[in-house]
Image (cartoon, rainbow, N blue to C red; front, side, top):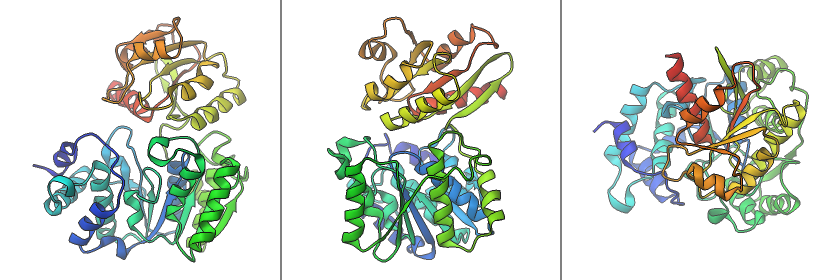
Length: 401
């Protein structure tokens, strides 16, 4: 069995908090994480954007960086970048085969995320990466990425997501995310993106662990050159710059060059399509993300003009995600994502009380319905789940291929 086939055979991407399985695998491979300087980036929203920006700045400064993020949108190779290039599929396959060879059966078998985390660290070691930038999956304290000893820890913000695992309160969520803090090391946190109870919990955890807390305010200094739109990106860019400055001597030119080069798909990504309506893709998959997206629609004069293609996981706060978006949509079509966790389209229509909305059998069918308005119509907003955005991108790539 190939390494990638073994990865897929691990089954649904279930959450199994704990570090023992990941540590055991890394020990079997000779502790690759100990050969790396590392940064952990946690948070409810914006951690992927921040991690991608940090990696790009380091690359622009001549630092060989590795970037590990999740989930992927189209291909699993997107999760691991070395020197700003996605890992080649054949190389990832061989590395996963090595991880599979040292993995144990039953309870010792890793989850999908744990296996990829170990593969990423091994790939970074072999590539002689100088700094590994790791996006935390869920939480922080018991996330597989927390096996490293970061020089810098980042928490972008704290919001209501994965409360069944990290909660029930936002203070509880903050404490779990603060599990990435390390004694004597900088802990950078977004100064304005979290409610007061979460900010207080982060401060208390920094004091308890002896981490050097730095609250980083948002800045519009780089807004004109940062390619990721939305006011919420001001804080992500500021955190990335602050983390990069703490890791390496930087010129202003390197910062600007790095920020300009950031690529991070599916976050307020505009896609033009020949002969069809443009798309606005955003992975807003929790209430805070949906509110940030709604603010962008308001700012850009798109409220009441966009048509919404909405899909979400059934175990999410669907009402909290959909509410701000439904209020700004001219027309709505629901579609189920190709996932066992996805809420069926008809279920979404009933659950959200939108009898006037369409319920499509697939994402492709939903787009076909909305494209009937012709290429001159306003953009179609695709939002509610990163998996939904990934499915739309796969369809687009199939169209272009």
